[in-house]
Length: 88
Image (cartoon, rainbow, N blue to C red; front, side, top):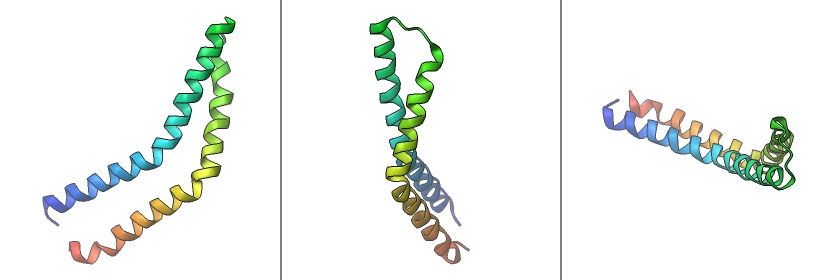
């Protein structure tokens, strides 16, 4: 295995990690901003109030997009494992 192959594998790993973490992080960000906005408008300053809505939002994303996430990850791992003979 040469340096270019190692860099390619690392780049693919970073891209797949970003693709899988993106929806969860975006939902968590949007829910956090919305709850913070509601807290500001209603003057409720409870720090733990954002936890439950974020948890529900992330759980919904995992339920909705979990099969896609799993298929993307297993596809990448299968491609990586199948390329092992060419790497040696």
